[in-house]
Image 1: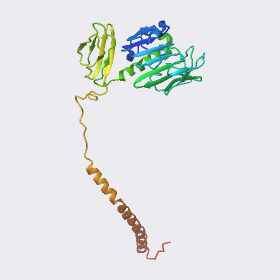
Image 2: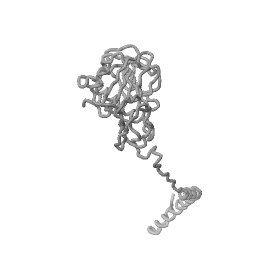
Image 3: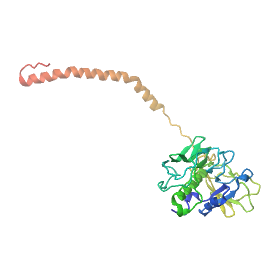
Image 4: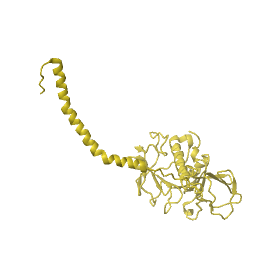
Length: 311
C-alpha cells in the first residue's frame, strides 16, 4: 500500500470535531489538507471551496451542500439514528464491487467499538454486521454523503492496514464525487475567501489572477482541469472531462437525420402480401403431399411388373 491514494490528492477537508487530534492525522496523507473547527463554530464558518466536510462526533441541522462524512453522529443526524453500542465487531456482509470496499480483507477489519446505523432515508448499506449497518451511503443532487457507525480515525497507515485502506477508499470516493459534480463547460467555480496573490490556471495553461472580492470564476469556457493556487494549496476543478464538445455551445455537433422512407415503404409492402404468400405455401404443401405417393407407386410397378397396394 502506498502512503496516499492517487485520487485523494488535492482534497481540501473541513473537519468539525471536538477531538481535533484524530482528524489531524489525515494530514499525513499526501495531497490532503485539513482545516479543523469546533462544532459550535460551524454555522459561522466559510465553507466554500472544500471538497469534503467531516463531522466527527458531530452533525449539522441539515445536510450540507458539500459532500460530507458523518462519523458516529449524534442522535440528531439527518441521515441515520444509532443503535446500542456493540463490541467484538464482526463484519457479516459488504457491498462488492464498490469503491469503498476494494482491497479490504474484512476478516481483519475489526473496529474496537461500533454502533449500528438505523437509516432514516433511502440509500445504500455498504458494510453490515449481524446487528445492523456500519456504513451507509447516500447521493443527493450530485453530492455524496457517508455515515459510519465506527471511528476510522486516527489514520495509522501501515500500523492498521485494513482501516487505513478503508480511509483511502472513502477519500477517493469523495474526490471522485467532487470531480464529477458540476462539470459542464461554462459553469462557474466558487472561490470562497480570497487572499492577495491567489490565482487560477486554466486548462490551456494560462494563469489568471483572482481579484479580491470575487465570488465565482466565470470564464470556464475551456474543457479540462482548472487549478486554483492558494498559497501552497492547490484545489482542482474539472469541467466537462468526458467530451470536448458536449455542453460547449460554441461548437455544437450537427444532428444527422437519416431518410427512412425507402425501408419503411418496403416493409409495409411485405406486410401487405404476407397472408397471400402463406396461403400459396400451404397450397404447394398439399399438392406435393397428394402427388408424391402416386409417383412412388408408378416407379415400383415399372421395376417389379406387379401392382402395389398402398395402405
